[in-house]
Image (cartoon, rainbow, N blue to C red):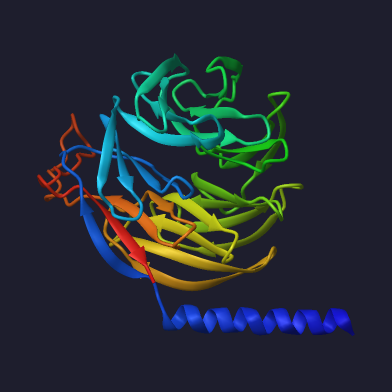
Length: 342
């Protein structure tokens, strides 16, 4: 009887939350311009430190999460991602120069050290269980584990044979890694630094973005083919798949609200917001129009606001034999961060 009542109460709460979400949808709150007519990659929100770290090709731009003011810049070259170790007062930046991790002081933003890793490191995370920073070195088809305290390389897991992409850590001794061109996800032992499992992702082409629900061991994967895939982090079982936009490059999970976000830059750009009704059930709450190319994202878990990097581009040049897939030119002065909230 008590179990039945508990489930009924939970169902009512879920329905109430859905009504509130529909009544108060995500929308564009403001646009934060950032000088510099060059590319970008990932953003990282340090909710506790109230800072937003924006990769911007040759630098990381640091914004105040509350005021959106630019607090400083950290120099780099072809920078990708940022991982934060608050307990150590350090941050870590992956860069393709051709492959390094820059360590910086969180308080002063001064560069502390620079470590050579594999070629073209893309995703970068901190594993709280081991206090190790993991980089997905795409060009070298490997993963590098760095001791966050000493700044020394603990070990390299190489010979992965494919394009390494995003990572996530469950805080219980496992790191998950998307293998983009193999359409699989690896489960790694973050202590012993070895591969434990290789799980195929049926229906998921080019797994890219990743985050997870650590409490329930659910891994959220955004697939470039336009699919959201939820994987059981204990068994590799595919819990569910649902359609999203194409060109996804970021995923965020908020355990306080049960919301899962995917940013897709294809077409006109969209933010797909799902609600975790239970560990095995997910409901689409809303599909928010953003802007074409707004593929990377960060979530401020204090305010629930979502931040997306974007710029405007001119028409795409005609293809030639030398450049079969030419990229359009960025319109000067248009690089910015879009802020979405309720």
